[in-house]
Image (cartoon, rainbow over all chains, first blue to last red; front, side, top):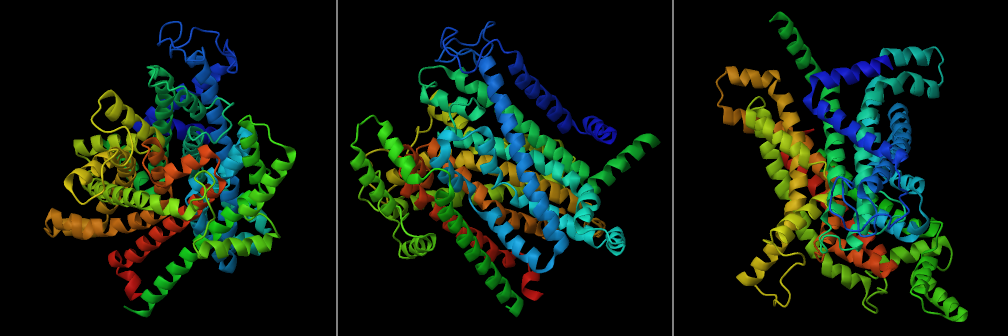
Length: 295
Length: 336
C-alpha cells in the first residue's frame, strides 16, 4: 500500500498529465459521492420548476421532467462509474486467466487460445451487443449489463499479459520454482501475477474508459435499462424530450461535459502510467533527476 | 516471393475465415441462449402497442415467427440451416419493411458505410501518423507539446459524443452543414457536380468526427514510437554521419515506426467500425448503423441479425486486406 501511494505521489509530481488526471478524477468521484447526501431521489420528478436554466438554486438547471440536473447527475455519474468498475474487474478476471494460462502453457493450448483471442480482438463488438441488448434489454440490471460487456472486453489485454508471461517463463526464478515442485497454479498466481500487475492496472483504466463509453452508446440507442440513471440514459431522455430543439441545452451539456472531463482524465492517466512503466522513459527520467541534482 | 510469404498469406486467410466462423457462431448462439426468447420479445413489444389480440392469434404469430427466425428444430439443424441461408445470400424477409428481404436492405446501406469507414480510416491513419512522427522527431519543440495536448484530449472522447457535439455546433448553432442524411432530398443521382458536392457536404461532418477521434489515437501512438526510436544508436550515428534530417526521418525512423501502426490499424478496425455505426445514427447517414437503429426502433429482429452478420464479414475482410498489405512495408515477411 505504501509503495502504491509512493507511485501515485511520484506520478503526481513528475507528470503534469497525471496531475490533471488525478485532480479531475477526484472531482468526478466527489461529485458522484454527493449522491449519498442528495436531497432528491432520482426516481421522483416535478419537485422543481421544469426547464430552468442554470442558476444558484439549480447549478446545472432543471430538465423537462422537473428534476434538478445537479443532483440527478450525481446518481447518473455514480451508476456509470460503478458499472465501469464492475465491467473492468470482470473482464480483468478473464483477461488475466487467459493471458497467464496461454503464456505459461504455450504449445497447442496457447495456439488455440490465441486464435480465439485474436478473433475477439478483431470482431466488431457493437453489432453483437446491439443484438444481445435488443433481446434482453428490459430486465437488465447494471450488473448484467456489465457481465455482457465484460464478455467482449478482455481480448486485447489478455494478449498483452500473455506476451509478458512468455518472457517471465524463461526466467531463472520460474525454473527454480518448477524444480522445487511448486504447483503451476501457485507459480502463476504468486510468482507471475505480481509482475504483470502494472500492465493490468493500466489496461484496467483503459477498459473502464471503454466500458463507460459503450454504456453511453448503447443507452443512446435505447438499448439499456432506461429506468436506471446513468450518463448514457440521461442523454437518451434528453433526446427523447427533444431538449435541444426546445432550447433546454443544459440537459445535454451537463452530462456531456462531465463525461468528456472523465474520459480525458482517465485517458491521460493511462498515457502517463504507460510512460511511467516504460523502462526507456524511466531511464530518461532518472537521467533528468541526476542532471538536476548535479546542477 | 518466397515460400514464407505464401505461408503468411495462407495463415492470414485462415485467421480471417476463423474470425468469420467464430463471430457468426456467436451471433447464432446469442438469441438461442439468452434468457429471453426473441420471438417472445417481438410479440411482447407488439402487444405493448395496446391492441387486443386473440390468444389463438398470438399463438399463431409465435409459431410463424419461430419458423421465420429459423428457431424450430434441434440446435444442429438450426445451425446448418443458418449457414445454408447465409451462403446462398438469404437472410429472410425484414419484418419492418415486409416483404423486402434483409439482404437487399443491407446491400443498399453497405456501400455508404464502406465508403465512410474506408476514407475516414485512411485519412485519420495517414495524417495521425505523419503528424505524430514529426511531433516525435521534434519532441522538445513547443508546437509538438501543443499538438499532443490536443490529440490527447480528442482521442478519448467517445464517437457518439464527438459526433453529437459537432452536429450541435456546426449544423445547429452555426448552420454550415446539413443536419443529416446522405444527399439533399429530391436530388437525382447522377455523375454531376451538384450531386457529388451534395454527397460530400453531407458526409463532411460524420467523416470529420470519425477522423478527429482517429487522428488523436494514431498521433499519440506514433509520437511515442518515434521518440523512442530517435534515441536508438543507429539514429544518433546517422546524425553524426551528417545524413540529412529528412532522410533520417523518412528512411530510418518512420519506416520502423510504421510497422506496429499497421498492425494497430488491423487490430482497431473493429473499434473504428463501432464508431462509424454510432456516427451514422447521429447524422441519419443511410449506412449499416442507421439501418441497425431503425431495426431496433421497429423491433426487426432478423434485420439486426443481418447487420451483425455483415458487420463481422465486412470487418474481417478489411482486416485481411490490411494484413495482406503488411508485407509491402515489412520486407522481413518475404525473406524469412
